[in-house]
Picture 1 (cartoon, one colour):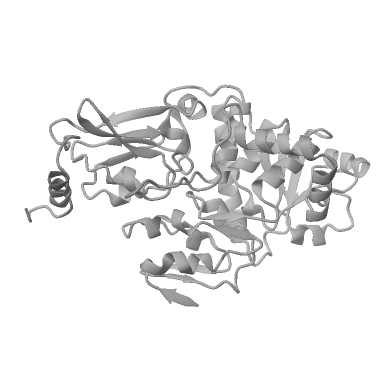
Picture 2 (tube, helix red, strand yellow; picture 1 turned 45 degrees about the vertical axis):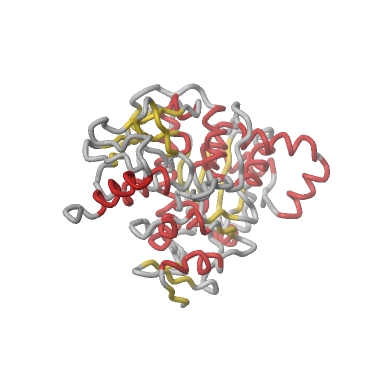
Length: 389
């Protein structure tokens, strides 16, 4: 294992970049601020290729490319390749023209059921499937999505099934918020009625790299349109790379899976509206307590651009875009005043519309926008080290 201090997280995480995984280390909340409490990738990794304590440890040789870390990381440090989420959704779009149901399975399941003609999309692990794929499939016309877990119990990477269970539960909760009945479930094998249809349709191993690029060669224009539709939804394309920071700011990047999820939600019917209670883990609502000093550090460290610095009528505040909030919790972690309030009571309509709201700090406690840099620094230090003015 390679063990280093937090200051070297960027270099260490980059070691996990491979054909099966792309790494954006600057999105790691622990790299952005030492107070980050996130250890989701290490907690979920079924082979302990990543470990967090006071320092980060990685073992690239242990990594199997299962993609579980990409599923659980809220800020998009890890993104699965071979196939990417976009490639999977392209294949799903093609299959949706032939059938109204879809099944996913891992290579172990394929070996176990090799004699049966069950069409499924093969993924390295069921835990590699995130909400953008499952909800994306429903948004493309799939009426039933099955995750075949018949091989999970004896799998040495069984932790992936636990992650998949959380994703399925959250995906169905999101569909319910949009007025759609539960459509995603686990099964040890395809239901009998679908197995008969499977025999008629023939097996689908996909999406193999060869088949995918053959599809691109035959239908370049149409496939490109599908790709853009998957990312764009109804509101124009979103940037895939990190936004170039202005001087004195940190880079921000909206993860590809969030871009794809937004596109999927926009293809669904309108959600319930303001005050929709949604499962924490994908999005959250933000507010501040009276103890907030207006230092705006929450906006400075936000990795996705959900929070940006703002001012109104000479008062400091933040502009909050709920569509870009991935509930990473870094804003709460970095706040020395314990002033950040994160809630699950979200207006999904504003999320779909990608609306922004300006949240102003309390006038009596906030630092005036026109205050000198020296005064703003003084107030920030007072908040960080109370009693040492």
